[in-house]
Amino acid sequence: MPLPRPTATTPPALTLTGLYQHVAGRTALADLTLTLPAGEWLLICGPNGAGKSLLSRLILGLDRPSAGTIALFGQELERLDSGAMHRLRRRLGAVLQGGSLLADRSVLENLLLPLRETPLRRTELARAARLVVTLLRLDGLEHHDPRALSLGQRRRVELARALIHQPDLLVWDGVADGLDPSALAEILEMLDTVRRNRALTLIATDNTPAALATHCERALVLDHGRAVYAGPTATLREAATDRLELRAALRGWR
Ligand SMILES: Nc1ncnc2c1ncn2[C@@H]1O[C@H](COP(=O)(O)OP(=O)(O)OP(=O)(O)O)[C@@H](O)[C@H]1O
Image (cartoon, protein in one colour):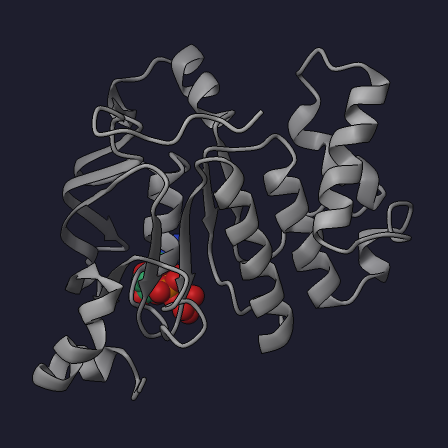
């Protein structure tokens, strides 16, 4: 049965307040403030080194911010004890840069990792795996070693694994990595279908808005760790014609 749609009383999926991250003695993220309603999609874009991966990791609670706060679904990460953080993590799915598949396990074993602590029966695990295998067109690859797959296939496996436990929030850092434009467009259509059936919030990063602008309602454009745009994607193009620093950060996107 589809989950209820978010309502006006649903806490935002993400709230950033005055967020800073200092890395190796420099300010890598500065004064980021943003609210993302549950069920909406956020594109984080900007040039190499803008801070997209650092921000993705902070949102997932993998690193701690130097200052400011991050709340997911109304829960401030810094205030959560390990049990509450563990429960919250079950609502999150992540695809990070650099690859994270375990090389000594098959594709299927990798896919099932997020479900290892759930009391699901074998038939239920098999059904969950079948769903994401079909969704991401991984049929026939279930028993392969991830090292034998192409980069694009590995990215699909990572996405399938991030979705297998039906997260409420998917953070996908580096959407273009390893995927050609048609494969990426296909996956975004598939995620749109998931979103039509239940509230899925997506936070996706890319260097330019080209692939994601039509799918994401909101955009955060970073340059040198600062927000040069935070607002609806619909007005991003217009804003870029007026503002030189935004146009520069968008690398000539038209
Ligand atoms: N562990 C680290 N030590 C030192 N500096 C770091 C570290 N991680 C990130 N940085 C710096 O922080 C800044 C932001 O890096 P980040 O990886 O978040 O950028 P990005 O926008 O994801 O870039 P890309 O598009 O190339 O993936 C960069 O200047 C980077 O060099």
